[in-house]
Length: 352
Image (cartoon, rainbow, N blue to C red):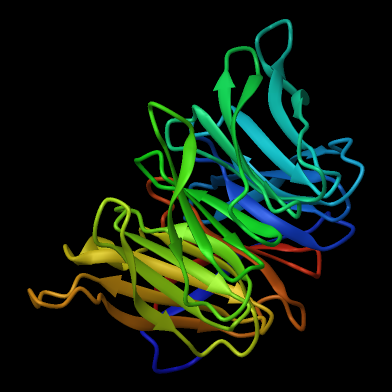
């Protein structure tokens, strides 16, 4: 850990159980649950609670075999926290809900629906902020938008074929129905719904020199962060309805950046102009955290940024595949990582 940085990342939990690399993680927005998925085709659900003495304890709550025929690459919770979506290299998307027993108590997690349509590996899945839409993307170069209907039914609202290569990630705006996707073609595409017609691509963001692996919107929705194989994280500012401009390039990563997450962060409670914290991780095994805030200079649209924490070898010698801030109130100082070692680790950011 760099001594001169104002914050440190302390380990809260090390969660094993996967028999192959852990690809992705998702915090349940409504309950004390953390989901992880793996090349071993399973999903693990971990619960967490305070012991009354200030210690946060994590425990395995469920292991879901999923029935997917290949790697489970991505997981996403609905905003209600009642439904979990899984995206798999078998090209399908699983929709999971917890059954209730005869007494109304929570029981097993069951597959309520299987969404078919992608031609090959499904890479990412995400729910919109209202939970009424689900997006998925695939190596088949397409982005699908599904409408969530009662009784776990889904209707495809659009198949977007804007990218020229494998689509790696999808991310919904935190309050509006704007979808972003990142691709092996080095671009980011933004999509909106035309009430008179269909979903369409409203903007293409170029600047990355290689694959865009991960996307994350700022909590206030005015910025988008992107992580790339070109070893950078870019920050894009929304200047108009569909107009975005790159205002920051965060460098220093020594290898591919596989994951980026923009959270409320701990320091934002101390600063009215705070934009929250960006966490990044990837092939160099280092977790980095940047604090961002609005620039008070009326002419500047470039946020103020500073690196506040850096944790090398977070998963030993292994690549980190995912880093995600916890969105739940009171837990905003937690972030989780998953790696090629099959481990999920939970960290707390705190003042040095």
